[in-house]
Length: 115
Image 1 (cartoon, rainbow, N blue to C red):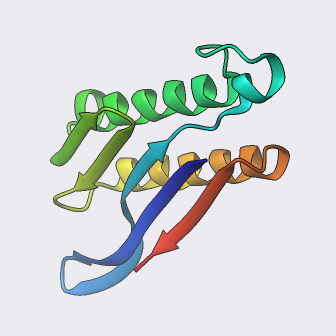
Image 2 (cartoon, one colour):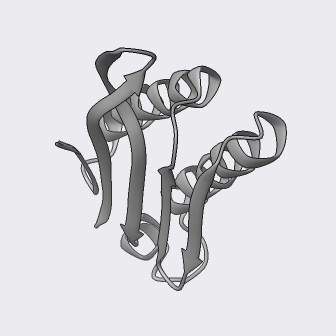
């Protein structure tokens, strides 16, 4: 099971507080490849999620120059924005929607929002 937990919370923008996505944690394995052909490493669901996860991490830190903590560990990737960055928040929202669409087709992706 791939667990995709997105964090949503208050972000200060000038004198206002707004609620937006500010991070995520992706962990586990989809197990789709092993369910289909009994071979490790052939999981198209994990490959899709892993690829877009790294694209999001790299775009946020390298292209948008957002101040973010990124940790890549065995079976787990986390990203947390340290300060509001509009482009990064938009990309996190698009990433959430992308995973939401994947989770509709593959029930081995569990997607949630945590405050």
